[in-house]
Length: 453
Image (cartoon, rainbow, N blue to C red; front, side, top):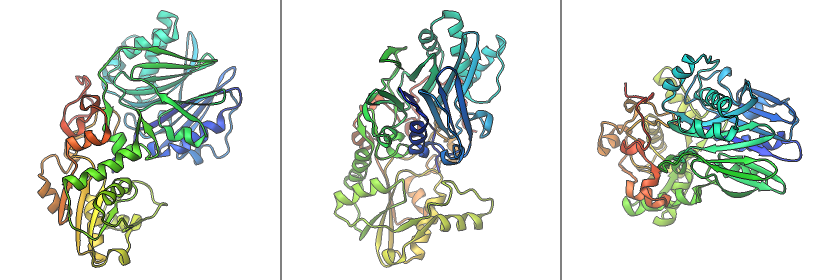
């Protein structure tokens, strides 16, 4: 299972904002389930954060304030422990600010060493604290908070969508590549910044636009915009394929429509005769709907998901892992028996879970199982905030498609082509980050932390 990154949220209003942040974070819980936090401010910053889901962390909490930021986290850099939970509050000569971050800084070790040699100390292992220390250092130098952010952006290599709380204003920052999503919304006199537009929908707010790559937006009495250093646009293709919620809109593209188109394109690239199209829930559902619509083959539910089981099921023994899959996903025998099944999913990482699912379908009486994957084969590590660390963990790194088919036990297996992926997303190829597929990393990676081992 590939794990998500994080989500950030910010709001400026004339009324208390805690509930808005809470429900926004809840709507983006799919992006991180390890920790959650909220920081609000009127005259000073107050913060509450903890390990666990949004509902658990804020069960008996409330913070009064008219502007604030929030965060849900999955650890891509730094361990899963409370000191790495965000937002962080930084106190320094110019005052204090709160910060939350979605992404991954590739040159973090170099920056950390430079800051430590200048006398900085760190209380976390998160790259977000490095960003915060740099902003504080540059702010002391220049005396201007916006210029401090711009100076910091020039030093960062990697991906970042930031929200900051400082001086009665909320700031949103998107990296020059636009790798991680960030958007603006409003309702009445209240303005929002969010990782995904589904958070705005949850609040009944209007999606105004995406934050531009390298843009710094300021939510004060009005919305102000400043531009940082330019860079090559490289939107993460996996946001469209898997990570983002299907009802979100990212950089002008409906995630649902992209996924449906990916499924439809698979029909043209890899048709097969079958009786039923079904999905690996929940990640393959929209792709499979597109496949069914284009092929004319009936869509049905072949697998029932237990929604009270954690997203990742890690057990030490093979027998336990097999039991874990059966507890999480169970074949519906009445739908499967005697039928030729087209099983659609977003991607294959290690192939172990898919192998067990196919075995389960065969045990339930499936006559044939044809696997269709909405993305091309994943072969390379991600440097920019996704939990895919080494090539060794990818089943496609040293195997042919037919080798993978035999390993997972499918009758046939077909992946989306790179051309089909680009066409379905609708952005020019040169504006997409597809490094996990092609090995072409769009950002400098001299200090690459995630390496093949």
